[in-house]
Amino acid sequence: MTKRVLIVDDDRQMVRTLSDVVQLHGWEAHGAYSGEEAITSIQAHPFTIVLMDVRMEGASGVDALRAMKRIRPGIRVILMTAHTASDVIAAAEREGALHVLRKPVPLPELVEMLDAVVA
Image 1 (spheres, rainbow, N blue to C red):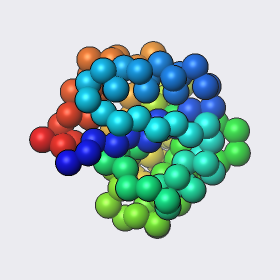
Image 2: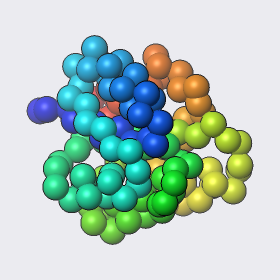
Image 3: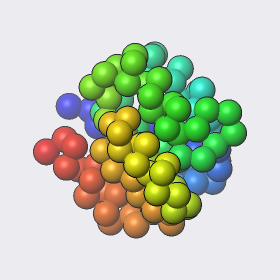
């Protein structure tokens, strides 16, 4: 099974960094830089999981998650946020996010979560 992750963040350096980290752990990483681009990507490609920022220009991570679930109900998404807005985190969990990670992302915890998805 190919382990494919879509990493979504409007911070291009964050996408590059997280892509490098997950690739070192055997994942095929693809990047998107907006919620809209992420939605288009999951329509075109099968991803094992999506790792996505909550706050982005245009569609937020929660909005994109909602749209992704309509397109692919079984899609697995982990959201990331630098903010502590409990209402946003609660909304993400209601929409079906597997987890909401705080930024800066704890890399060992991220890799462990990704590996648990395919275990």
